[in-house]
Image 1 (tube, rainbow, N blue to C red):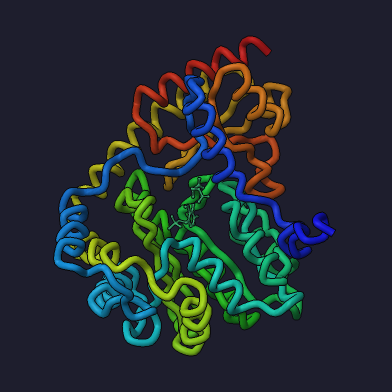
Image 2 (tube, rainbow, N blue to C red):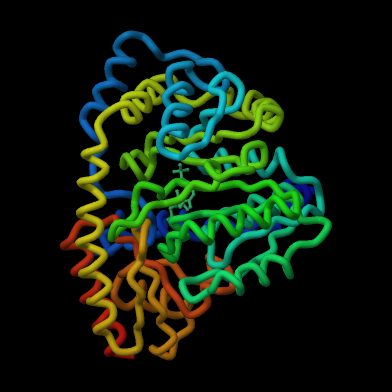
Length: 394
Ligand code: PMP
Ligand code: GLU
């Protein structure tokens, strides 16, 4: 009897947990137990949140701004987001009816997939892609369909792969440039091609732009929401976790066509009510404040990227391309003779370095591992040194 009572619903039992979050939690536990862990697993900026943002939250708390807010978000934050989307991304959304603020971009993804998908609906994901897309699609009863996409993929290959993947059940594409885990930043032509295919096949596009500010070497992340013909079929997810080093504040948002936003809001009302009130005030300060802190962090990430990638490439059996954006190195470790899951398990056991196995990001991640360089320079140096020792002892 008791056994039956503790059985979870099938759709949850069959769901894998988040590999990134589980590995971060494990690294924390091992550290707390006294193990000298170098944790390169999760994508969490090591920089503090900017002081003017912290002050805005404190001022809100002190002034008693500690109650429920409108479910979609406070008007000044919705306005600031609409302004950002219009001026930086060329995407027009009505702050009164087309933007919803959530505790984290992840929550926006969850609610969007719950809102959009009927059982059996197919969703195109680009492979490799972030760990939570496929599970969110599956929890909503949808079927993830992977389309391989890397730096070597030509425009015509991309077109062919998309055409082959699309069926009458395809409803949605989830795109993410800069990409977690590969760091690939899509070119204007690639984004335009995907927009064209979405229009031809009448698909919705969910564009996860959480790493948009983290681009290197003069690149620019192109927002599909700003392209002709994409209004009405594009949803943009973004947040402050990465751009403003605000992961723990939990603040993300979605911009979506009014009718879809209205449907999403119902789930938000029943599940969370609203994002934290004083965090929303801090988010206004972050969005309306100067960009210099974000630019400073990007400059530091670029230096770390260059050093880490060259350290990795000097280890026999490891090959790493220079990521174009985000803050992850995604080296191929197949030359070490280990599968990526063995590599990550044994590296943690032997050298106490936590990294994420590539398979967590889809079939194309096989043979790769992901290292986050949102970590202090000395931690990255220590991590690279331990990886070198680990590989040379294999
Ligand atoms: N999208 C991508 C691609 C991510 O890597 C993350 C990582 N946290 C998120 C969305 C979610 O961010 P958050 O919930 O912290 O806003
Ligand atoms: N997005 C980060 C990562 O990929 C944080 C963990 C998570 O939310 O998945 O590591």
